Amino acid sequence: MLAAAGEPCRVAFDMGSSGIRAGSSTSSVTTQADIDYLGPLWAERGLAETVAPTIAALRELPEAAGFDLACARVGGGFSAWRLALQQRPHELVATLERIGAASGVPVLVIPQRVEGGYGYFAARQLLGDKLTTNHVLDIGGGSLQIAGERTSFVGTLGQKAWHRALCRALRDSASADCALQPMTRNELAAARTLLADQLGHIDAVTPEPVTLTAISRPVTRGVRPAVERLTGTEGRRNRLHRKDLDAAIERIRSLTLEATVELVGSPKPYATYLLSDMLLVEGLMRMTGAKVLQVAEIDVTNLPGLLADDRAFAWSQHYSCYLERLRALGLEAYASDPATCE
Image 1 (cartoon, helix red, strand yellow):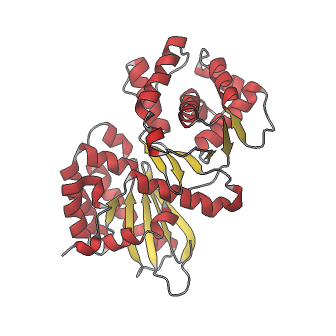
Image 2 (tube, rainbow, N blue to C red):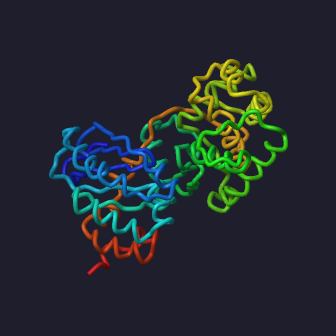
């Protein structure tokens, strides 16, 4: 996203579950640093061990990308940061205060509904008229978005988080990558019930009829090509039908992972999560009533939406007030008015 003449110069940091991406309103360049935020949170260690690499990334990424160092800056913390707020709210506020003081970057914890809007904004920018559905489905590691222009749903069950939930429920394992295959019919039913219980309020958040375009790699490089190979439906022009997905799940659920790799031809990193990804996509299609899923791989980040977010940059000018409200109001601090700060 490039700023037009006279528009403010801005730098934003998309702080997800596995790292930070930096972008600027005056440059088409983006740059990133890999930092695992979910691991320590899942181990209930908080974010203390990530503070030093986070400060380093916030300092170094703009310079490495050649951004104008005089631009206004703001960081958006998403699923991992919301989890940290839920687990240890006062500790997170102190952590954000430390990060801001050392890096010069105020980091906000962005609510789910706002993140959903960012996702659709970025998809519309990248796909233009090719985006023919009213929502996009973006499955990350720790969370997923069903993002629309007016209504959005953000859930905590991304690819790794959902697989981990199944490991706990079906294998009594705390591992994030246990072996789910082979899976019995009873376990399959239990998995579907677990997903319905955890995501059953989608209808209340997205009351309009939902049509979906899946944009992320778990679907574009994992689920869709595997379903096509398993059901002989190649050539569907980037469409995934729910009946074919159901048939593919039934075909691989009783196989070992090794047999699945051989049958599907997917690289093992995709095959490890293939069955859980299929169940996640199938459940989302059922809950939204979608019989067909459009598929279009694009590299969506929260950067375009964050760079265009006037409220976020207003908070960057009243950061101590934001932190006070974050301590008192939690996620709703973002929605309050920065202009009312003293």
